[in-house]
Image (cartoon, rainbow over all chains, first blue to last red; front, top):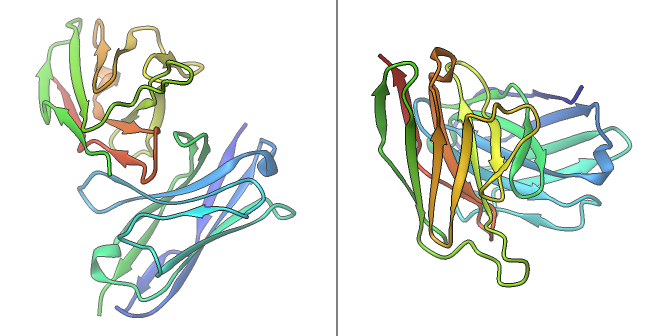
Length: 116
Length: 113
């Protein structure tokens, strides 16, 4: 059974940093691209970042480019999202997912609240 | 960026009816190389994570009931849910997986009368 478990969320002040983790199991992690997608409270879905199988290629929308960094550790079956210079508009539930530029399996999500 | 426009934003139907949700992309999602359309559909039930229903416009994910049907090509796509059941109460999103940045439609809320 595929499982994706996100951790690391919480309340953070604007301008500060936070690092999310997602531990994967139930599939060959090193063979899959991994993704982060977020959903602001009561709003729709927004893709946040992608990373290829060996971590050599990463992608971001303009809304987070230069502030967020995705990385992975294939030995630990874990994908990370380092979020710097956080803004109030980054407040959302953050999901990790695997797939092929569509999102096959999703984690349960972790809440990030950016507020003073 | 490819803009995805979904309609309607919400609808309410009775159990047993057929529902149609539309999704229009600002650019074609049809690959000239393999003639495949790069469009996915997701279902998000209240309080849950999204679930993949369909990818490549019409390929149903394993385990998804066959009453969920994806169709369309180019810039116009449809998710049809036949014989809607109470458990289909959810938000539905389309997403283009043709090019970066990956983008979603704004969602359709399905309510059951």
